[in-house]
Amino acid sequence: MEQDNKKYMENNISYDLNEQSLISPLDLGSPLFEPKIRLGVLASGNGSNFEYIIKSIQNNQLNAEISILIVNNPGCLAISKAIKYKIPYVIINHRDCQSRLEHDMLVMKKLDELSVELVIMAGWMRIVGEEIINGYKNRLINIHPSLLPSFKGVDAIQQAIDKRVTITGCTVHYVQKEVDSGSIIIQAAVPIKEQDSKETLKKRIQDMEHIILPLAIAKVAKNIRTGFKDNK
Ligand code: GRF
Image (tube, protein in one colour):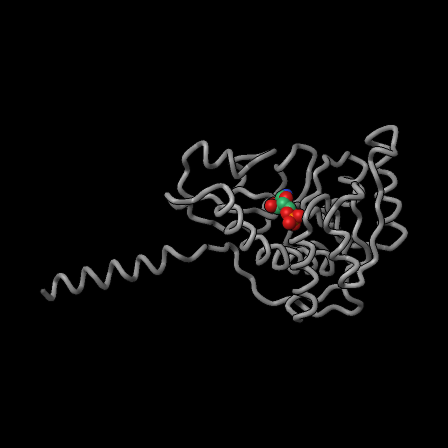
């Protein structure tokens, strides 16, 4: 009986642990810099990550200011969040540009005009060219819904489901030319449950994205202001 109890307890404990997600590395705290680090956010979609960056700043979990939200399509829901929180935004519609380069240059001009120090691709559904990548070396980061280097590219959550992995997650990484391939800054692991649908899994991954993206911003901000000492 005592043995059974022990087993039961152990099972209970492991069950509890399994409800949690792992974040690594977990550097809490955002160093205070004066003036605050100036962020530029690039978004194409719902803007939930954009909103959580704003909330982290409001809660004093992240010491930064958002200089601009840049969206590439007028229907992007991130715009309504910029309006709600009174963040400046601009629509730079790629459909109005003759080439990818022309669009990239317009984006970069706006970032430069505002002296943006760190650029965050928060659901930016466009591949950025070398001009932006080189112009913002070690200052351009992206969030991706998988544990990179697994499941790069589009529909990473479906890719993980199709491969029947039992743990997936999300990654914040520096952007380099090859898609979803730059150095990893922080990751969160998310278990895939048997009963998961793509939607339930996506929700749990996004919950973790909203936690790790502000942590990654704080980490990179520290690197920028201390001369990239921590960078690989
Ligand atoms: C996120 O899942 C992110 O990983 C991917 O695009 C999605 C953006 O979501 N790159 P949201 O627009 O921030 O809600």
